Amino acid sequence: MLKEDEVTEIRTLSRHGMSIRRIASELGISRNTVRKYLRDNALAEVRERGPGRPRAIEPYEDWLRRRVQAADPIRLPATVLHREIAAMGFGGSERTVRRFVAGLSPPPQPEPVVRFEAAPGHQAQMDWGEYRLGNQRVYAFVGVLGFSRWMYFEYVTSMRAVVLVECHRRMLGDFGGVPREILYDNMRTVVTRRDAYGRGRHRFHDEIRELAKECGFRPRLCRPYRPQTKGKVERAVDYIAQSFFNPFVTRCELEGRTPDLDELNVAARLWRGDVANARVHGTTKEVPRDRLIADQRAMMPYIPPQTVATSHVRWPRHPLQRSPKCYDAILQEAR
Image 1 (cartoon, one colour):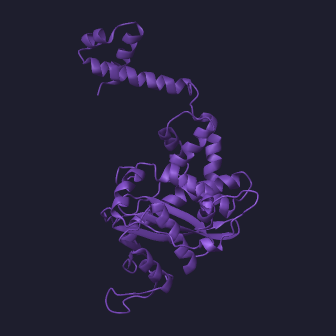
Image 2 (image 1 turned 135 degrees about the horizontal axis):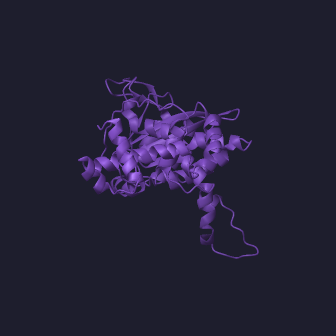
Image 3 (image 1 turned 30 degrees about the vertical axis):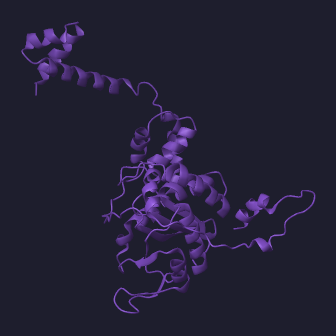
């Protein structure tokens, strides 16, 4: 490190138009050293002069502050905030947004995770998330395929067994197949008694047992007090809350309204396809939509139950005399 008078001499010679090579030769130091002290001086002068040219994020800083404060104590990811102000005209990078919002709230403490990698088509994991939508309590049914990390979720107003089964049917239809097993927490609508018939032989709820028999999957339970066993769906529940539900609901609140369940599910379906299953997954480093192909090839096909018989449909005869084949869409909609 140079002495203060040597640094002053470097800057004085530079102001008189002497080149870096000449200054280095005169003082017997390297050119990189000269460059370093001249660069440090230039940065100091910029700080003394003022803020310089306007920053790209400056017009959106007040909105970001209000957005983060309105959502507190919920922490909104920088990816979500970047998407929102990009729609408002911001042309900067996500990193710029991340740097700005980092000072608005303390960084979260990472939690330890336990990972188990499943073979294609082998396992799916299911769990519930619980939220408030205005004055109403809603629940997120979340399912994740273990290999591809393909995610399905929807919002309902009850966690009853009949609702759980219907959510399963829609999930398997979205997966495009049935995995060999589905892993659950020890919830009452899934298991009525652990180890009822011996170690690892549980008494499952009638609705789940019949669904598993019909579709051809094996229900499995994670170890008690060890939710990390189904860490993939646990992280998915957190990801959905942080990146979709909380940003969507707080954005609606900022607009002075509360979305209803139908609007929430429509937005969830769009986000699921455009963001969640189209992003590069942090663990696999691949896109779930691309890996889903391997899962579907390994899974059994899912055949939905036949809920509408042709004989129960009254075919219109007037004014169009057409074959019932023309009304396949009616049956599909009814199913």
